[in-house]
Amino acid sequence: MEILHQLGQIILNLYKSSGLASLDWQNYVMILISFVLMFLAIKKQYEPLLLLPIAFGMMLVNIFPGIMGNPSTQLMTLEQLQAANLDPASYTTSVLDGVTYYNVTENGGLFYYLYQGVHLGIFPPLIFLGIGAMTDFGPLIANPKSFLLGAAAQIGIFITFIGATFLNFAPKEAGSIAIIGGADGPTAIFVTSQLAPELLGPIAVAAYSYMALVPIIQPPIMKLLTTKKERSIVMEQLRPVSKLEKIIFPIVVVVLVAILLPDAAPLVGMLMLGNLFKESGVVDRIAKTAQNELMNIVTIFLGTTVGATASGTLFLTPKTLGIIALGLIAFCFGTACGVLFGKLMCWATHGKVNPLIGSAGVSAVPMAARISQKVGQEENPANFLLMHAMGPNVAGVIGSAVAAGVLISVLK
Amino acid sequence: MENLNLALTLLIAGFVIVFVVLVLLIVIITLYGKIIQFAQNAVSKKQAVKNDSETPKVKSVTREEIEEMTSNEIPDEVIAVIAAAVDSLYGSKPHKIKNIKRSRSIRSSWGNAGIAENTRPF
Image (cartoon, rainbow over all chains, first blue to last red; front, side, top):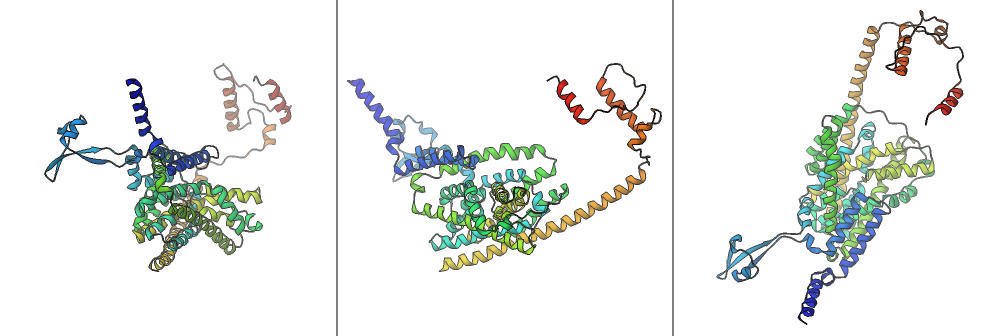
């Protein structure tokens, strides 16, 4: 009988400590959402490098919220300490109302510590370092006018800011939501960690989800805003760019941007440092580390911890729905403004610019450029727009970092 | 209302700042691109002129002329190339080039392809 009682007690304790007793319906919904995201990442291969760790982090935190738990200090009396078999000499004391308490500190969850890289704005610039080391700015240097398309696609950010303000989001929150229109995950995380850290989960998930859905979101907008004739335009081949030009480029960009917009310096600075590693050709080992090991490690930490911010109770709110809707609007506006500016350039150059490359002005490197190529080839199979679209695409990275600098400097 | 004013200000300021920064970059990149291209063109032209003056003039020989030549008349460069090809084929086996003469029975490309197809070991 005693054995049965003890067995029952063990099962009860196991149940109490399990997720079944502590989780509420929001957690279960989030677990289901994480399954959908994992499906999209694995089966559809939508941005799997980020979507997979994000989805897994989301699942883990909703099963075991303690993994993101903050470190805490518990006040215990001597008797409680002895009952818990703890050594009083290991703890500092505080006296409250004449009673001595021992400060027993409890460590936070694993993801709490990893998340500090996001919270303190360390991971996004490190990701930019890796992106810089992988990016060839040659097409942009060969055709610097591409910068205009990269700038035009950022208009969506500022238009969405107005929309978010109309929906009664505070200015800092509105700025964080609007940056989703830049279609640049690290930039969105960086801005949000500076302006509205409490919205990091929904904003990061929205930003990466829309980046993953670029092949679905962009083509209808591109086709709607262009004619068949415009989509068929074949662009002239780009001139070759010398090594010296490629080496000077990152230095010039950093000097100019950091002087004019110091708030954009962490992002642009690291992006261009990575690029200088690559183009200088004298630090091959460092360039390879930035492109591979460092980038991969930071991606794992960033993805899982950002996903872990999406716990059910915080995520499933009307505010999140507003953020996701506004993020989509921002993204669509960015694409549309890029294409429209592309049309303007097409008109100004008497048909030498294919407006489809304008949509690549939102960052989402290199997915957005690939979409320009794909939509262009649907009209004219002999048309190769990829290299032309890479110019606005990498200009979009710089443009969204500049827009981020503007938002931070105005709103912080 | 106050937030809306801020939003409109940010729209205009943000739009203008992003464009100004990127237009400045366009100007600078175009300028230094032109300077570097100009400098590199000047250097390559100078190099070409120097190479022209230093390179000894070699008498050009046509295919027909080579066909008519005996081994004594074939230019040293052609002999060197043929010797290198023979050496790479025979390797360490002892070999000696006694005479170089153009073969009159030249097989067509299709013929060569057929032989290669049928004689390739695997």
